[in-house]
Length: 389
Image (tube, rainbow, N blue to C red; front, side, top):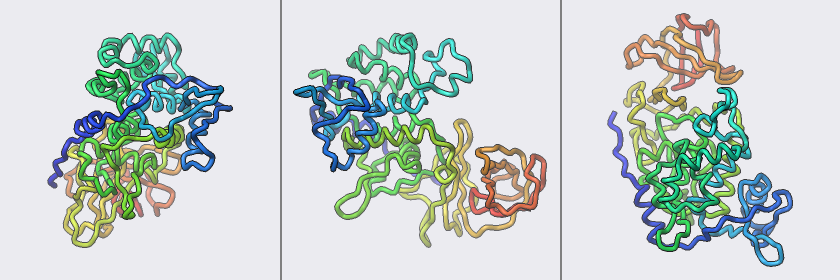
């Protein structure tokens, strides 16, 4: 199946916001007592009041000192690159999910590294900043942001080349971060599983290139970034637009909640219906060039799949009428107490004798023993087993 050729828009998006010359305060907001902080420019009726209040209490966002010992938040200001890195770090820290498998984890046990932690020690912070000191200095990263930017560099959440866009060379103030860049960073920070097909239900989906689509799809599936309503009732992603501080407070809260959440099969499995006579590919539905396509486009009524762990080959199912197939179970993996990922060497599925992965849950009708080596007859609706004998 031919894969659509995407157009890279990240560089253009970054250039657009830099050229716009939008101002942003470059100083670090002063830390305030989280449980007592209130912002004079965020009224109780403001749409993001709860999100900002929650993020402040969790230490994810800060306010700026104002007259009379009060604090302001500037909710309508664009979030800068440095602030985006800071909020992502703090959201992961609040959830106890900071990674420590790189230099920051020196001296830790493997189990401690895997579990993540809520804070880096001063020694760990210093090691990160020292490792990336040349890049941070060259990009004029503010002192207050160096730990956070070093962290996202260390774990490949951002590329070093992106640092060139962080700070205005003339004013030394932080540049606004475009929405697409924020989406990619957020998805990488969460370290969730990618899918083989990406569904982007946005009117401007054509402005999102294929390389970025898997990250936008990941955030959409997990309810972290779902686009913006337009006056005509449609939803757009607006990849080159900036992100308001109020919006990023909401995003950070979702990162916090999602980072600590258990595996949710409803967010990892997808089943996109295809209109009669339509082809499975469009600007809104993309296929990964790395995915194995199972089935045939002829008679396809849906595209189904499941997200895969890093290093695994994702699979895309072109689904028609469910049919009985035969195969041998090659592997089983407990994903949750109710969900098993079953690898089946299918006798005839248009993919030779490759192992195809299906989801088996408590709703699957079953009379067979689900263990490796068992020969089975089964019916699957795309990725999900309906009946096993």
